[in-house]
Length: 251
Ligand code: ADP
Ligand code: MG
Image (cartoon, rainbow, N blue to C red):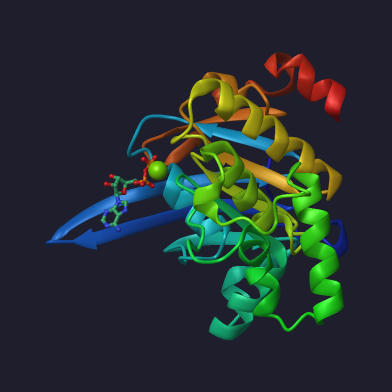
C-alpha cells in the first residue's frame, strides 16, 4: 500500500501515484479521468495495466511520466515528486529517468535507427564518445546490433518497435512507460517485442508500466492491475500468483 511516509530517495520505489485525481475540461464538459488512483511500482518491477477503453490508463501513464500534473494527489519517480520540479527541471528529470514507448513508434523517418536512438542523449549534451557507446549498447540489447545505419522504413514493424524500445532505454531510465506498444503489431510479433522489452529493461534495472489490451502481453508482467473508472482495482491485483512462468525464469 502506498503511504505518505517520506522514504529516503535512494530507497524509493521506481514510481508512485498516491490518491491521484485528474479532470479534463473540454466543450464545457468535465471528465474525471482519474479518481483516486494509487499505484506503487518497485525498482525493476514490470506492471501491466489493463482495463476498458476510457478508464484512465493513458492518463495515468502521462502523470507517471510528469507530462501532465494531477489535480490532487502526488506522483513521484525515484522518490522525486514531479510537483517539486519547475518546467526545465521536469524536462531534464524526465529525459534521465523515464523512457516512453508508444503504439506506432514515433520514430523520425529521415533519421537512421542509430540516430533515432541517440535523440534523448543529444538533448542532455552527453559527450559524443559516450553517446556512441550507449547507442551501440541499446541497439545490441534489442537485437539490432548491425542495423543502426538503416532508416525506419527499411525495417519491419517489429524491428521499428525495437528501435523505439532502444530509444526508451538509452538514457538508462528508472521507469519505462509503454502505452499499448504492441497495438500495431500482429500477435506473434507483439509477443516477441514484449518479451524483448521486459528483458532489455531488466538488464538495465528499469521498471516498466505497460498498458495493454492483450492478455498475452499482460502475462509477461510481474503484476497485473486493472483500471476502472479512473482508479485501480486492487482486488484485481492478481500479481505474482498468475504471472507467466517465463517472467519468473527471466527475473
Ligand atoms: P484509456 O487510456 O484507458 O482509454 P484515457 O486516459 O485516454 O483512457 O481517458 C480517460 C478519460 O478521459 C476518457 O473518458 C477520455 O475520453 C477522457 N480524455 C482523455 N484525454 C482527454 C483530453 N485531452 N480531453 C478531454 N478528455 C480526455
Ligand atoms: Mg489509452
